[in-house]
Image (cartoon, rainbow, N blue to C red; front, side, top):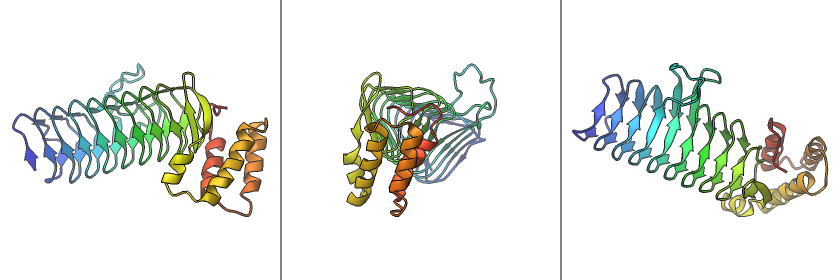
Length: 259
């Protein structure tokens, strides 16, 4: 393990021998870091926090800190981080609260650009991009393969579906279905994330089915229950897993989808 002499590390932490810890980093009690992870400088890690393999933390990122939510009374809640994530300058991530499941969770292969924020009790999947100053409030679920533009804000308890795209400076207070592209303040739907779908090797056949289902939801003036039912009929003989993702993102909505 390469540790700069100015780093402060708790004896109650558990750190793999391959981890690199740069100058002026602080690692608190109950922090576990697995192999290949790097802390460049001035990184603060609070626990209980579990960090997987080959993550990179840039300077002044604060990870696993207590939430400022007024419900929080110092309970021993958790943060869990997967593998190969990049946390750029000034990123902040808070642990969970006992009023929810007591854990904030981040998957693998995410890029969090400078000053982005993940609040308490959020669940973030894999391969997402948070651009500079993007912030999600407490209890937000972010799926997989999503781009969240700079200066975007997402209201608590929202669901953001897989492969969706959120433009810069967007204010979101409702659920965003999978594959849907939104922008503006307040947010409005501007189409399907066709570019992102193609980049993720979604076949033309699946793309065509999703376009048909999208039109049922956004172009046919149907109630959401009717649009879901007709979307399922589209998939009756096709068994398209990507269309299933779109349908499920509609079914799980609690705040209502943005239309």
